[in-house]
View 1 (cartoon, one colour):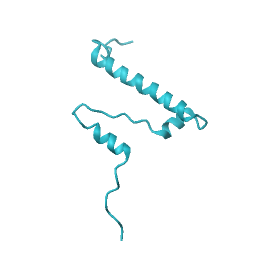
View 2: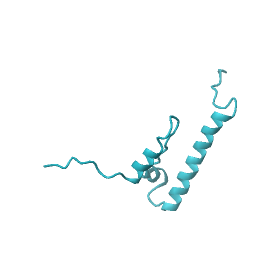
View 3: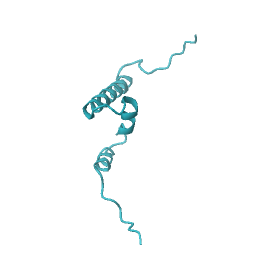
View 4: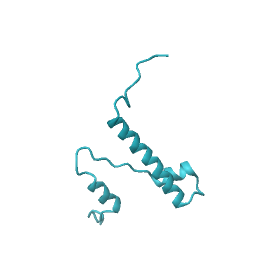
Amino acid sequence: MADNSPLPPTSLDRTVSGCRSGPRSRLIVVLNEKLLQALGDDVTQDQAFAHANEVLKDAVGGISDIIHIPGTGQKSTSRT
């Protein structure tokens, strides 16, 4: 007979539930498999985390700019 009891929460589960504190809370996840795919199998853990950190920093900065800098993120109406 199968045990249908729920699995104990993982650290990711706890992180996700902690990010649900407000209507605008978001969680950005970079999968290890995607890092390996982008950087190659010979990358070190420190190199992979440093690269992921830069990507996330740039993404969050871009989102912040769209929110806070007037005109950023507006679609161009010019046609070429």
